[in-house]
Amino acid sequence: MESGLVDALVGTHAILGAKFKNLGLMVVDEEHKFGVKQKEALKELSKSVHFLSMSATPIPRTLNMALSQIKGISSLKTPPTDRKPSRTFLKEKNDELLKEIIHRELRRNGQIFYIHNHIASISKVKKELENLIPKLKIAILHSQINANESEEIMLEFAKGNYQVLLCTSIVESGIHLPNANTIIIDNAQNFGLADLHQLRGRVGRGKKEGFCYFLIEDQKSLSDQALKRLLALEKNSYLGSGESIAYHDLEIRGGGNLLGQDQSGHIKNIGYALYTRMLEDAIYELSGGKKRLEKSVEIQLSVSAFLNPELIASDSLRLDLYRRLSLCENADEVGQIHEEIEDRFGKMDALSEQFLQIITLKILANELGILKLSNFNQNITIAYSDENKESLKAPSKDDNDILETLLKHLRAQISLKRH
Image (cartoon, rainbow, N blue to C red; front, side, top):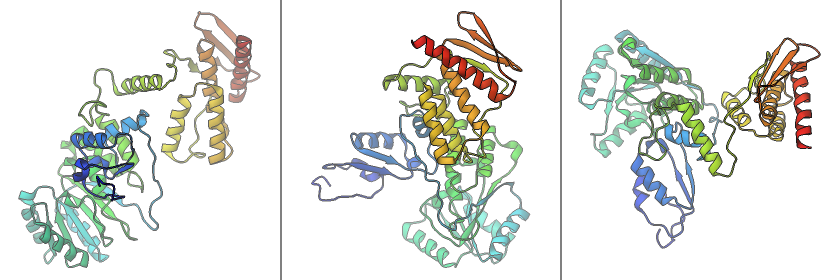
């Protein structure tokens, strides 16, 4: 590598100490598995080279950095052909439920992963399952079993010689067994969001529908954070839901420290939303942009306006467009996004059109030093920062007439101001 004879190197984090003659591209898979020290080593190794990190569920700090425009972010949303989403259930554990889950999978000649993340008591769980369902063929797998024996167990399970693989979270990644389509996760409240999503990804990898069961002892005894995690996973079980789950994780745990060692955690003193706004302002200013206005116009118009889900079905795409529109500084930028929406999604409906008009109104009003825009029926009031007020009257109280009257008036004022 140091002499440049190797063109591409594939390896674990063991390569972080390697020396390269002319490193140009670094790709890190399962980025959420790396700790802070490994991230620092990656940072040193990837100076002045192209760097791509991949994850189904990025950790809060990584996602926070992407949303703050420190890193770029893109998403792969197309699932493999014939892949069906796995159905996810949050249930309180009992013997009857376990029997029903296991028998249902056995009836369709499938196999089951049973995740019990405590090596000391895993043999006890095996006996309980054997007492519950006699003649059930169970294999045990965990990190204290040597590599050769682990490989043999996995091969036997893949051949169908075992019906249940009772294991720790050792199977979280790198396992592709299309015939294993039910996974039971014991004491699911003890796992993180990313871990549970990865474990759920072990099933439904063929043409059969996968089933994932998060088992808990008592829902009432769960902490608020644990319940939020589990409900977020139960709700987001569609294909490609990792991005949405990562957003939930960011919301639940916070974005951590960009320069410190914490990869999650809230900014308690000022609040996460204000912290993010301050961070965005600082990055925007340092990258050559003007600091955004501290005071923004207050718009109190009785107008229905939003990006219509019937036009833009994807929640994440709509959120991205809302974010981009909120950062627009002139009407031309809004016009460009208008053209992009019509190019990607077709002709805009009235509600979406009106939302873009309100964004334009906000930009023009901020330029003119307007504090507030409000209306009662067709009567419009404009309040300026110097405490002066101006009244307008629209042809009718219809949303379109209200917005058109305001836009025409503010554009005329801008034109006078500039000339």
